Each structure stands twice: as C-alpha cells, then as structure tokens.
Image (tube, helix red, strand yellow):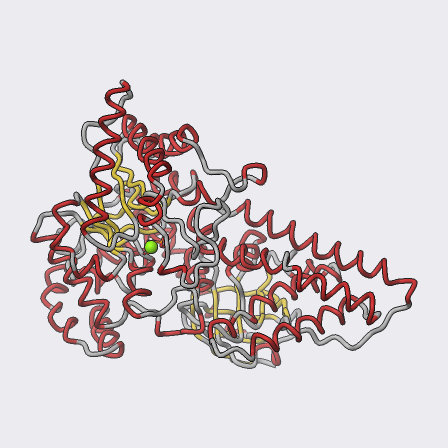
Amino acid sequence: MRRILSGHGASRGSALGRARVRLPHALDVAEERIDASLVDAEVERLHTAIAVVRSEMHTLRDRLHGALAHEVGEFLDLHALLLDDPELLAGLDQLIRTGRYAADYALRLQRDRIASVFSGMDDAYLRSRIDDIDQVVGRIHAALHRRDAELQGVAGDILVTDNISPSDLAQLHAQGVMAVVTASGSPLSHSAILARSLHVPLVIGAAHVLQKVNDGDVLAVDGGSGLVILEPNADDLREHRARVQLHTRERKQLHRLRREPTRTLDGVDIKLWANAESREDVAEAHALGAAGVGLYRTEFLFMHRPADLRRTVPDEEEQFRAYRDLVLGMTGRTVTIRTLDIGADKADESGLALTGEPNPALGLRGVRLSLSRTDLFRTQLRAILRASAYGPVRVLVPMVSGREEMIAVRTLMTDVQRELRREGSAIADAVPLGAMIEVPSAAIALPSFIGATDFLSIGTNDLVQYLLAADRNNEALGDLYSPLHPAVLRLLHTVMRTARARGKPVAVCGEVAGDPLFAPVLLALGLEEFSLHPGTLLELRRAVRGFDLSALRARAPALLRARDRVGIERWLAKSGE
Ligand code: PEP
Ligand code: MG
C-alpha cells in the first residue's frame, strides 16, 4: 500500500529501488546455551568473526583517502580500538566458557553490560558513545552470521536503517548503494556532510521507517525534500523520473562549468581553491579549474602509515616526495601545504601526540606540537621548502593562537631557508607563510600579528567548535555546533575586515566553504577566496555565479544585526529570492 514517510533531506538526489532494511544494532537475541563440548568451537567462531570485522575495517581504512579519510578515519580508529578492547574480548570469552552461552547471546550480554556503565555516566558525550559500541557489536554480530552480506550486495538498493556511521556510509558508497534512509540523525552530522560530498541521496529522521518498510519494498526517495514514498504509484513514478531528469540535467550543466570563471553577476572573480590530499583529489581539483590547493593536510602522511611503518614518522625524503608530487600535479598553480596538525584529538598512530590528554582538542596539537618538537618541524619545513623548487608553494600554520607562535615559526622557517641555500638545495625565492585562523584568540588578536603573516585561512571547523564550546565530533550537540550563530558571523567579519585593511589574502577552508547555501553569508561578509573539497567545487561555482556581490554586501549590516539563528536563516532565505 502506498504510504508517504517524511524526514529531513540531508543530501540531494533521487532514487528508486528496493529497500534493504538493516535493523538497529541493539541485539534482540534470545538466550541460548551450548554444550560444554562446543565451547572451544564457539570461542573460535567468535574470534573469527572479530578478525573478519578487523580486517574489513583495515581494508576500508586503506581505501579511504583525502577528506574522506579525515572524516571517516577517526570513527574507524575509535571502532578499531573498541574491537581490541581487552575488557570486551575477555568478557565475551568468559561468558562463553563459564556461562556456556552461544556467542550471539554472550555478545548481547556484554553489550548490555558495557552500555549500562556508559548510560550511568553524567557526561552526555560519553553516554553517546554507546552508539559506537552498538556499531562495533553490530558488525561482529553480522560477521557471526555471515551477515556481512548486510552491508554488501547493496548495489542498486536503498538502505533503510536506524542511523548510519560515516564508515558504513563510505563502505556502502563504494558498493554502489542508491540512497540511504535513516530513522534518526542530524543534517549537520559527519555522515550527512559525507553523503553530500559523495553525492549519496540521504533522508534522515524518517520516523517509524523501520516499522513501516520491509525488505524488498519499493521506495522512491527524494534527498532534497526528505520525502520517502513506499510502494509509489504511477504519479509518483512520473514525478521521480522528472526529478531524476532534472538532476541529470543539473549535473550536466554543472559539468559545463568546469572551464568557466567563478564570477559573480556583477563581474567579481571569486577564487576557488581545493582542499586536496590524495592524487585523485589533486587530479579532480586540477580538472575542475581550482585556483590551486588551498589546504593540504600533511597529518595524513603521518597518520595513515602502512602496517609495517606504524609508529614511525615520514623522514625528509618521504615528505619531500609527497609534497613535490603534489606541486607537480598542480602544474604551476599554487599549493598551500599546512604543517602538521596532529594531536590527541585526531586519530594518531604516529606516537607523536600525547595520549590520554584530558582535553585533547585544547591540548598539544598543531603548531604547539611542532614548536615543542623543532627537530620534526625543521624536517617538515625542509621538505616543503625543497618542494617549492618545483612550483609555487605556500606554508600554512595550524592552531595559531597569537603573535609569539607566528614569530617563532617565521624565525625557524627563515633559518631553514638559509640552511638549505647554504647546502646548495634549490628552493623558491619566496615562500609565503600564512596562519590558520581557527582559535578565537588569533581571530580577536589578529591586528597584533597580521604583520607576521603573508596570508590567512579561516578554519571554521575548529573556529566554530572553540568559539561556541561545542565539540565538532559530538553529534549529540545537534544544532549547537553551527556557523549560523551571530558570534561566528561577527568574528568572521572582523577577520575579513582586518585582512582587507592590511592587504592580506584571506580564504575560508572549513566545511562551510563548500556549502552553496552558506555562500551568500561568506560573500556578504567580504570573502573572496573559498577552499573546499573538489566534490562540491562546481556547485559552489554555480551558486557564486548567481549572486550579485554588491547587493549581498549592501545587506551585510542586516546580517550582522541578526540576533539568532532564525534571524540569520531569514536573511539567507531572502538571498535566495
Ligand atoms: C578547520 O578547522 O576548519 C580546518 C580546515 O582544519 P581541520 O578540519 O583539519 O581541523
Ligand atoms: Mg582545524
């Protein structure tokens, strides 16, 4: 029977296909005991399943690259840690051996035990980690029943599930899933951001979808409006086809923009840089006409080491080769290489960052770590400067909090430049040095150290988290972690005004730079350089080409007067009229 279920459209695109329902991970397994003679075999069955999951996660990890590795990697690492957790494993073995429970039931008992400890915690963030436990336990359970088929063979299907992790989404995308519908989740979650950059249609928060949809039901999903139609009728099918045609036409039109300028209606050229780490990103950025690479996150060279090189750091030659290839890949367009931004908050296999920092996002990360390990920092600067002999390079410093750090980096870099010239190494005459503006103190105190910088790049991912005291990785915070806050807009405006007054180029390189819906805000506030994942570059170009910059700027005072999110959204709605 035809039914309409509605949720929130979190990633545009339409899909028509059969539903593949994946029930929530909370295991509904009945108590089952086994004979003493079967205990060893049951323990082995469990360990085989765990090994399967571990290897699946490693394979997935190795296949991820670029921004995807960044978004998904942290979750995968956390899940890998849980999988190796001795408490989880020993508890399971013991339940099978002494309780003589079947592996499934042991898994359920152990899950409930751990979950009850977490749910008793005061900390909402820790409580929300139950989701991670459920995802890991769910994977083991699926492997026990060879239900890895659950996530495999979804090509051409629409996955219906309670919630989706970024790692599952990446896996499903690789397998050719058509669309995903979830019963819960937030449009600001990492999974939603990821779905948009992978172009996987996603509807989230479709209440009761798990109760109403059965495996094999036909669904028409619209990731734009959030509508999910169960057993669509002839009219629905016609509408779906029209939407698909529209979408295909749109993508074709977008494709035509790859050689067009990013010019506003009133003739102002806006610079689009790419955030690129992998060869594929670099090739795509180049093909789509990116001005250059605005953000190359070097920590990936340090974090995703092959198994035999774990806990080693890349030496000067290895780094030099990676940076040189990046520079060569952009054939003369400028490449912005960010120095190491590793810390206990990022999944770190290098052993460089302190472990167990009580407050890792506020800990020894980014430039703080680099300045405390000048041996490593000099090596990195040598490698970057040597790559500058092959094409234009800029150096970008992460997590700057004020003047002292910028001066210290400038001094060190000048010294390394002299050293390389003394040795006879080829390096560029000038390598601009820039600061990431992502710590509120740097944004506020910018006039005091802007003279020590050649350019700026605003990292809104962190700036929003530090300004609003809202963890960027905590989905439980929902709307709280959002750039649509008057304090964020005012700070962005101040930074852009200061940069313009001092003639320093300024870009935004956080996620918001790739969101066409947010573009009018950034343009109105004075931004003329965006750095974004190549996957959304053409959409942003199209959006920019539809705006009259002077009209938007004339409305900037109204934007800055907005008192809350609703006011900002109202301003945005008028920009689209
Ligand atoms: C940012 O903070 O906005 C940023 C681009 O850096 P990262 O996401 O690597 O912290
Ligand atoms: Mg950052």
